[in-house]
Length: 486
Image (cartoon, rainbow, N blue to C red; front, side, top):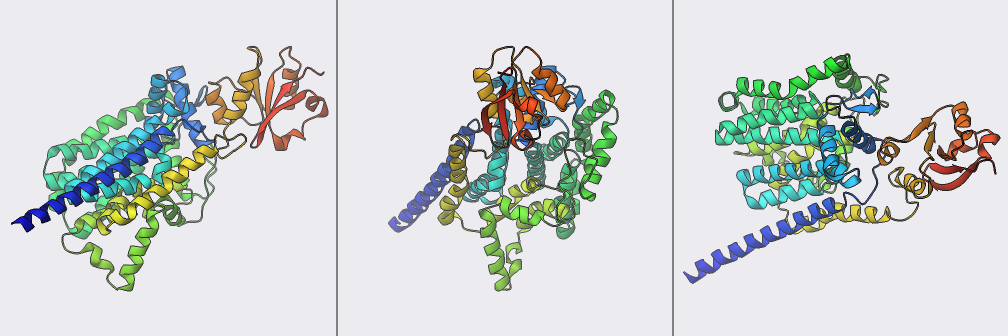
């Protein structure tokens, strides 16, 4: 009897130790992430662009159509991320912390969803492992503090796929409706790609397992679809009414030509990211680091033993579901002609669940989980040193201007105006593209400040260069002050 009690006590102690370790690791990951949100500048072009759109939305009170510039609508994506950014800036002011806070909160939500799903399916130890793996992959960790629309999309897909599985297991209508709420979030975050990526996972899993009848009974397809349409469609109709042409550009350009036409020229807000088809798999390898290499080790070991199917043994439709969840974005984007590494983000939740279920992590997870956040912390500290230009942001030059400029002296960008300048100057950065404009502003009585790309300075006329007194250079740009011809 004493031996039995001792054994139970030892098991309880081991369980408590695992929980304490998991809680400590996850707390460290989340603490580093949230505490560093405001310690480095918004980077150009993507992050500062979306932050500036949120600021413009708050300033103009136009909550229907995001603006890429004053009077210029942004048709590239739905507005959910911009809504959240604008609301956060309203709450806390025009700064990096509150610009990035929505992404952190959405990421925190994804971690909780994965933790809950894994705890229901496999218990607390696997839940802690899944949450830690997800939180410490390099792409998830970086994006959880980045102003970007991919985070809201991934949250919607994560919620939808988790709710779908729980609806099948628990036979509760609540989870079935939550599945459609997740799809609605994705539709308002980035569009129909949400349904495509979710559909690949669910469709392949259903075909392989043959669970047609269960899915038909447990998911409220008619009422749920109606709920999804009621949540998401009104904005699309109102947006088209406000700025005609939006629906054609959004659905045909952004959701067909972007992925099928290399170096797509129809992008109104930048340029297509032409890539070698299939490179999404290499992007994923980097995105899931360091855990992707653990996963590859498992795969290679299974292949060498000629037992790759042992992951998907009896009663492991769960592992199959996680595997397809991980693979669906990779399969879809394999044939895409335009993509960036953030497109791998929706796969990471399924990957974390799969790896936690396939592998005994406690003896490895402390070291591996610390790699990304501690490296990131080192980069954040390095950003505090003068003239360290990791992020191509204008914050340093804008700060130098605001410290010495008189109220009537403007900051004028010549030929190139990054979005971060707009954000930090709250829309007051002047933009000039012609030499004649530059000469006219130099002729004004105000001794304005100018920012020019360093590579373009030598191309300026001597009469202009003689008026420009160097103040500071940072990265690719240099700040000058009009000396009045002295």
